[in-house]
Image 1 (cartoon, rainbow, N blue to C red):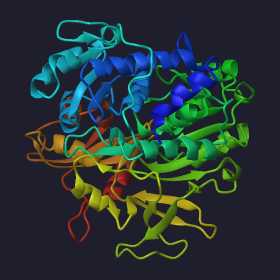
Image 2: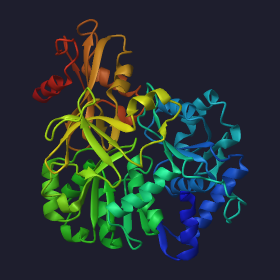
Image 3: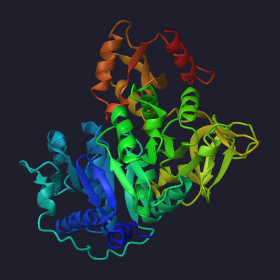
Image 4: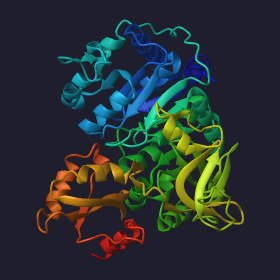
Length: 506
């Protein structure tokens, strides 16, 4: 179950098949395998070994993909971090992950320079920039210079060995690093290749960020099957439409805001996207209006995936996309699902409860946090914290997010992370953060505050103050409501649902 064995297999048995396109670079499997081997051997020469953590702070680029597969071959554990992280969040996650080497770009050099003094576990020669050396940083070209293109030594990787740590939020509070093993990622290879009807002749286009877990939904089947993967530096709806038509793309994984952008783009014509066999939505519910438009324009292509990075997923198959349009589908193969009440009892069909599941792709746990792992996985069942119900056919329907999580552009935003920042303002007495609908991002955070003294600070000033201090850009609030008090229930708990309605009416 060593996923590092996949690339050399294709390098040997279908060496000339087009593996990867990024900008003007077109690599066959033979060429990609050689590049990955150079990086793998370069990392070993730098002193890294199986089990060591390698962090990346990169935009979409060829080097990020090379890191993923070099880590797979060597047993090094890759920790992909969002390039939207701000300084405090980045320092926190680098420390929590026990990273021993960092690969980034010159755009982050000044920030990394400021945090490196707090990270003695990373040697001075293990700060690497893909766009060339500069004082205090090693160049990526230097890291791989002179390294062999032959396979690195066998690391003895097993399916139980960790492959990656993915952090669930940008985080100013408790970091939660989700650990996936080689065995879990091998399951992504086979199960999603089957679920999405992919073949060795498929052509995948990925235009969203490849550092979030949703990217692995097509990244792993690509390498398992040996098909073709096209990576864009960033999402651009017009460019995506052109690429699908030109390259005869068959499979795409997107977030709802990207689907909305595609449907509303002036260049959108169904015939330009006729080659698509799958257009998948992940990361947040797609509004029914956009599902209807998509299914009318491109019938038989839409899939929707509901899931947690921790390892429970349901998929609405393309053949069910119309008749079960409000649903997020059924559990994938080898998975079980239960809807439980607060006492842990299974509820009847149609009744709302917490969505729980178990299956082979569940995380190994939260990194160094057995306490949090024990709360999330109880008697082998992963508790999602989301509320939903199943219909008479067993299809899952989402109702609400029990944990009040906000999903903005497919990225998880936890209100408490933002609240912990906002409450530090000297004029703020109390704060609560909730999500509101946004036509571009799906949802964005809004803060409601009670001031210590009326008129002590204005809403726009608070927005700027909070946004300058949150750990990541996707945690920035779009507005602040200043109130005399919050609506509360009899227990004194703030009613965010009522606040959302107040915001809509304002």
